[in-house]
Length: 386
Image (cartoon, rainbow, N blue to C red; front, side):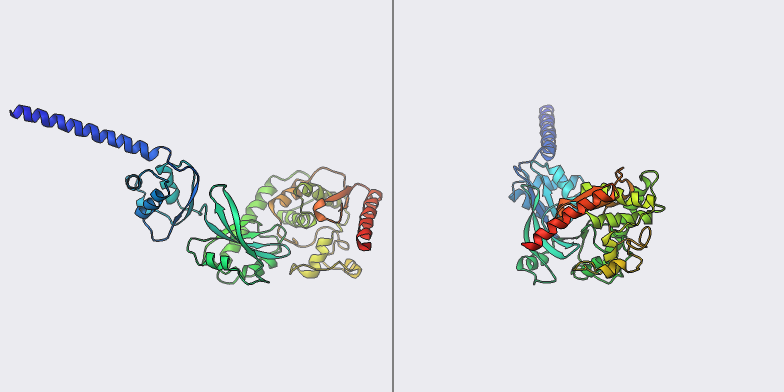
């Protein structure tokens, strides 16, 4: 009898082990296989929450087949204590393993609501936007000029949320003074900072957090520009009349202010490179304007003849060669154009139409250039007569 009992017990134990092993195999497959999501979602992980609450949220949104299995898998992978607060884009069909990796790896949030402080050449604006998980694109909620308007209610609502992300975006061609002035109104930043050297900041989009200092952000911009300049200088064309990265930065800033068309930058750069090679003065209006404003805002009017004749360090109608410093903060494209210009014989250019977006007409000879200028003057006369 004891032998039969022992045999039955052993059989039962084998069955239990077999079933347990089968459950483990099923659980592992379920944890790693594609999940039930039919479209992407934005998963918010508040500060102070835990994996249990996250699993409940995922189950409620039908992102996982089992909240309990999600928690057990995260615990088995030693990920439970690595949960990071933020807003995360969970893609269609994401497995439980993938979701655990998304909410524990940290870094910048990948979806949710964002406030973007845009610093432009002529104005600054604040944009409130939210990522649409279905399309992967940001949808604008509100936009306003902080210098002229009161913040709208959507901005105030978003600023009150703990999971809102913040970003400061610099347009190509802004001056260092403009950047520092506008950073003063970015209310999530703290502290003061001096105006850095002209041209030393990289135009880009920078994610910031509440309580970051303005000085630390400016230092990030400086480091980014140093890296860009060093990289482009190392890959420059041979035989350029530029003796240092600083001179390259000066020329790049002039190219930046002369054209907003990416395809034109290498051509515009070629004009200035050709002039430098021939010992011709650059004769470019943006440098004259910088000599008048010192980069503190826009001129807001045309250049006077007396200003074109004035002997200032930035008047390239009077001085030879490059001005002493950059006249703005150029982006990578303009730096690259200055160091890898098109190979042309162009020495002149003038606006093609009254719309700056239409680009320029280039010329190799003064006679051809004068014809292009005359055509432009006729367009001006037609406009003024209307």
